Image (cartoon, rainbow, N blue to C red; front, side):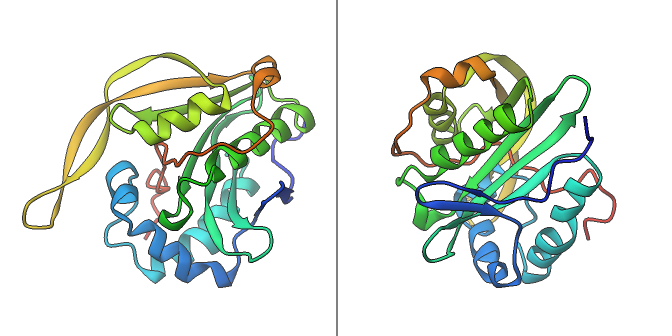
Length: 218
């Protein structure tokens, strides 16, 4: 089996999951400066247009070409407005397992876009790519991200204690790190048999990387 994902797009009833485009950069910058994204992701703050360009145009494509995973820009099918991001990462090509993370833009929350996008990627991963496991991690206080996992059909496997650093906003408007637990979820091919075919309301931010494991982030 190949050790890289194909360079493809995935379409659903309302969405297209595709590589980032230049036109996505302003919306990506706005989305990553949202308070919930700052809280639950490890994205740099403030997140600049330069950060967006680096992430979308250089680091995201490298995830696929190096075999680490694949990054999808999630956009509305009709308008191409950026809805969010789906990232498959930490891919193990021998085990055929990978970890998914996602972010939903503030304006798109509550529309079921996160569930729709995650299900589309899961079906493609299991049916077309013949993977056997998809893992998801959510911070203990991130109830919206956990709701997406539940609606998709993920099974909670346990808690990694004190395993993540989120952020909390202080009275002066600044941000400080806050250590928290991680809930580990998994989805297997057979779990999709009971997954919803129709959209469901939900909004989501899972544990989302900033590619900080790569020394050339900045």
